[in-house]
Amino acid sequence: MGLDVSETRAGLIPICSYCKKIRDDEGVEKGAGPWSEVDVYFSRKRGSKFTHSICPGCVEKFFEGLEGTPYPKGQSRE
Image (cartoon, rainbow, N blue to C red; front, side):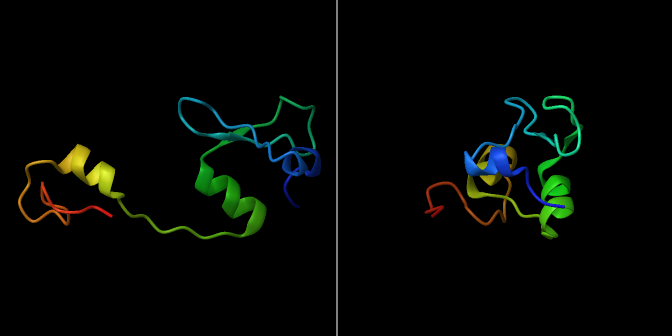
């Protein structure tokens, strides 16, 4: 069980432009595979494990104005 050699050699893994799900065509006709969340796809294909975090841009976007955020307005986010 691994990544599709023809796609990975070319560096291409089909990913939805909107929701970022990845299509897995392994063992089925190209373009007919199921769509999975990125973390599910890589966990299944490579045994990768993920942890959740929030990038500085999303902290600013979703938590702007809240006191105690790790990146108060005006401070460096990098």
